[in-house]
Amino acid sequence: MCKNVKTVTWESEALMGTPKESRWAQLCPRAALSHVGLFVALMLYTGGGGLVFQALEYPAELAKQEFHRDRLLTERWNLIRFVSEQNANITDEQTLQKSLSDHLAVYERVLEQASSSGLSLEIDLNFPAAEEKWSILQAVFFSSTVLTTIGYGNIVPETFWGRLFCIAYALVGIPLTLTVIADLGRVFATVVSVIAKHLPEMPRCCSKVTDANPAGQRSLYALWAVGFLFLYLSAGAGLFKMWEDDWTFYDGFYFCFITMTTIGFGDLVPKRPKYMLLCTLYILIGLALTSTIIELVRRQYARSWQQLRALSGPLADTLRRLGDAGRGVDVSALHNDLRKVLTVVTMPRLSGGRDALSDKRQLEWEAAVEAVIRDITAPVNQKKPPIVQIVIYESSV
Image (cartoon, rainbow, N blue to C red):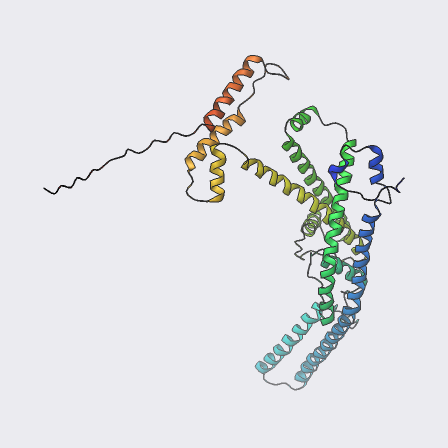
């Protein structure tokens, strides 16, 4: 059934009004293979990058932790020895306090550096590593933040080869990620268009508004899309609330929003390694969904602005002068024109029945609208200033 399908366009407009057989042909597994292949290629690229990052950065992480552990133990022993020697040989109290304060300051600084490098301050266990920054799951999660340009900043490469590989990895992977996100967005648009065809009819009040005003229909679709995005963010917030012990629902929603918009402050980052792969998958799907909805809202803004600029009459001319020149515009004329247009828009349609206007009131309303439009489009008669003619007569007498 799918042999004759060579190219498939995953656009929402392409499925509108297509036959049922054609729709099934577009949704067949062979036609969807390219989309699945793109997604799988991105997953393999992300996993491979995580393995390379771990191979380059994990040995350096272990060496750094060992260095700070030895330094911490050395400074601790120096502090203990200093205190014991001073107890045996009592000297001036002021000098003792100053020397002890200097040794404590050095030890506190070493403690802070050891803690920031990932060591747990447990003396009995010889200061073990609190967590592995470059474990396989953390490295894969870091790769996904590089490809999606989120960049939390909690984990960064510190070696020369790790940073060099990060540059090359991002140059190749970011275009691939953007391609996959755009492809997923088209798939989402197709799925939404197919689902919309099987939804029950809208209520009568809503259908009247959308049938009479296509712009209102597009605005309604954009509103539904934004509502679905908030639902997706809320679902992610609930999951992160269950995964992270110290996160509230608000913290999860804030993290999801900052992530899906690729802001990526890094103030909140998941800490459970076993959920990193699910988090990566959630972020990739959410980015495709968010970019699609943002593009839909952006197009709605663009259409509204084009309709505003397409208005005829003195109001449109005044708005164009405002946009082009920015100065020297007659604000009073703009105010009068806007008042007249608002009069036309907000003029109530008085109805005698439920669905139709009476003939008399219909004629009165149309006459009033025509009068206002005629008043708007009529040329403005400006008073010309009086001309004073001065004649200078020169005589040779």
